[in-house]
Length: 350
Image 1 (cartoon, rainbow, N blue to C red):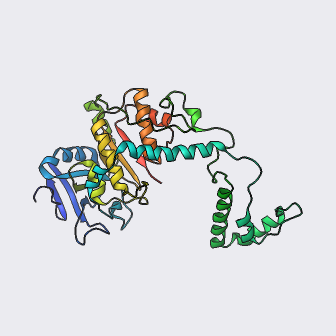
Image 2: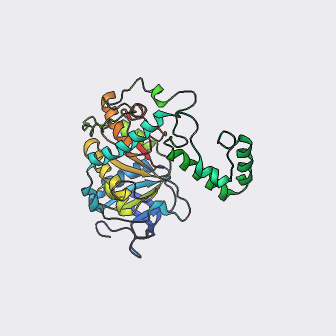
Image 3: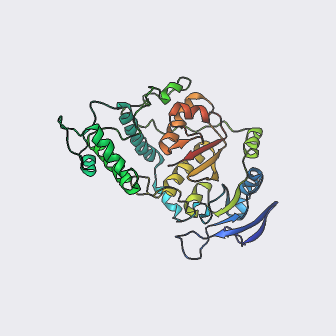
C-alpha cells in the first residue's frame, strides 16, 4: 500500500493500530469502481484513542481518520458524490458567513413581527375547497369545517390544502406558519442574560455579520483532550485519502442534506470544507465524527475561553448551520455558553 492508497477489504493494521475488518466504499455517483473511503464493518467500542493514533500516522499513510455513526442499510454514511477539494480554495469564509447571517437575520426579523391585523385573505384555499362567500364576503365557519372534513381522509388533498393555505398566507405578507413567537411570549432571548450578543448584532435587525472571530491560543490540556476522546460512543472508523481533515467531506462525497445550500450553487461539502479549514487555522479544529444524519463534530484544540470570544465564535456557528452544539441551540448567547472552553463543536443541518 502506497501513500494515500485505501486498504483492501478485510482486517487492517496501520503502525500500532489494529482495526477490525473493513470495506472500501464506492460512492453512488462517483467514478465507477473508484473507492473514496475504507470503513470498518462494525463499530469500534472505544474509537477516540484509535482516531487520535490514526491521525498521528497521517504523514506516513496519507489517510485521514473519521468516526462514523451507525448507518442506515445501503446508505453508506452519505458518501455519494465526490467533488474536487480544490474548490474549497475559492470560498471566502467571511463572505460565506456574511451571506448566511443575512438570511438568518431576515428570518429573525420576520418572526419578530408576529401575527398582525385581521386574518389573511384565502383566495387559493377558498377556491380549492369550493367555498361560497357569506353575507360579510367571507366563507362561514361551518362551511369551512365541512369542506376541510371532506378532504381530511385524502392525504393528497390534505397536502394540497396545506400548500395553498401557506401560499395565501405568504402572498398576504404574513409570516409562514411556525415562524411566529410562542403564545406565552417567551423567546430564546429570555435565556440570553449571561452571555451577550456581539455588539450591534442583537436580533431582530439589519445588523451585518460581525466578522470572523480572532484565533485562540489557549490549548486543551492533555487531560481535557483525553476526556473528550474517551467519552465518545462506539463508532465505525473510516479512512479517507485526503490532504487535511477539512477536505474529507468533499473527497468522500458526503451528501446528507440538499445541495446547493450556498447561494452560488457551491456543493455543501465544499463550503463546509472552507469553514473547517478556517476553524482549523484559528482554533485547531479537526473533523472528528460524521453523523448521525446531517451532523458533524469537530475536536477543537484551542477553544474560546472567555465569554466575549465565545460569543464571536457562536455568531459564526449560528450562521453556519441550523442547530448547534448537539443540543438544537439557535441563538448566539445559548451557543456561546455551550462552546465556552468546550473541546468539541457539533453542527446539524435540516
